[in-house]
Image (cartoon, rainbow, N blue to C red):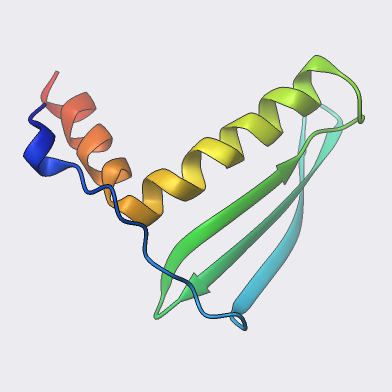
Length: 86
């Protein structure tokens, strides 16, 4: 992966933007998902696991923390392309 493909500047989101909140169920556990979109594209993601203080809760929060900035910098598209190309 070349460093030229990665932008270090983040897209600045407006203070007010549309957000969607959903509860998802998997293996009998409830997950809380919230995401913000602008012009039809998801920019910001928050995920809460089934029980605060558990490892699974921490993994969900960490995953969302990694998704949002990589989406804002364009790195997420680069990572997806690298995964597809092997």
